[in-house]
Length: 190
Image (cartoon, rainbow, N blue to C red; front, top):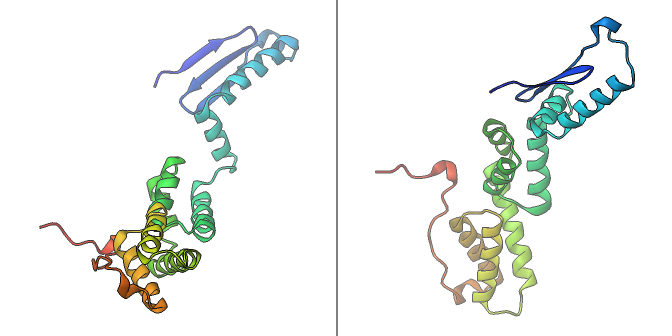
């Protein structure tokens, strides 16, 4: 990457990727500040603040940004408050620019049993709110909810069937009997 260099009246301003340097350039006055230097420094800082990479690097070095901690907190918060699956949480973190390894570590804090328990809670809540509707509509709406939150169809239909059987309504509809395969247990390709 080429270094961007601007020689102003009293400072030299350089940007090299995420690094910005403001070099005071009044050697004849021992770099004593004056209003022109304050103006040049201020404008250079404004330019640096407008560059996302420079600001992010500054915050990382200052300890204000810690993607690993952010990712762990995001996973915990969004899973518990919104019931999002590991897949959805990974996608959200990717969209926010978190590194793949940090995403994997954060999402691994959520075990598959906990994810399935959250999905079951969502199924129970949705089916309770749709009582009085046809079993097909209830199953369809519940499956849609789980799909939007990133849960695989096999898990969704298994849980819907289980909860509806507990209600005594599952025998009315025919749900796909596809077994739930956790993403880490996917079958190898032939």
